[in-house]
Image (cartoon, rainbow, N blue to C red; front, side):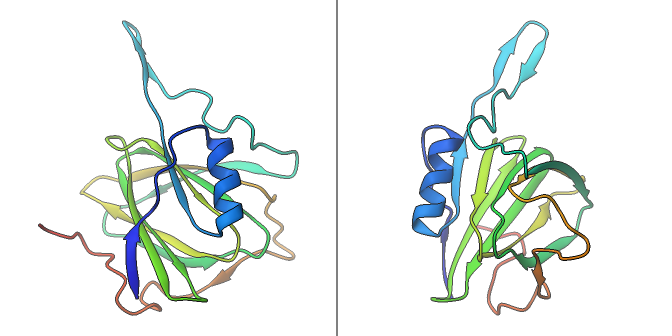
Length: 164
């Protein structure tokens, strides 16, 4: 397995979305805080990618948990970790290519995961992680666009914290 960082795309999430679909690889679009004397915000994060068939979700992942692996045939995922930190893993079966990116409070941005790539996340640190995510297809429990595998299904993926 060849492991690399998720490529960074400086620009808009819409530009990152187009690149992820065109290249069939995940991308990370960093963002900036808007801050004033009242607090701070992350604004306009999914501008240009929302569609009537998609949905916005939020999930909390407890410390020590690895939620992996799964993939979609049609759906693109847009992941933003708003609380704590997650190590995002992405794997492409066709050429055994893998990517990793830590996202969260200290590394804000959006990881865009196009269809057919296996993906998942491990909580980094000792506090829960909160994941806000947008998916381009509404979940259909009668016919889910989802295939699952165990977290250790792809030998060698480094879910544990890497030191050094």
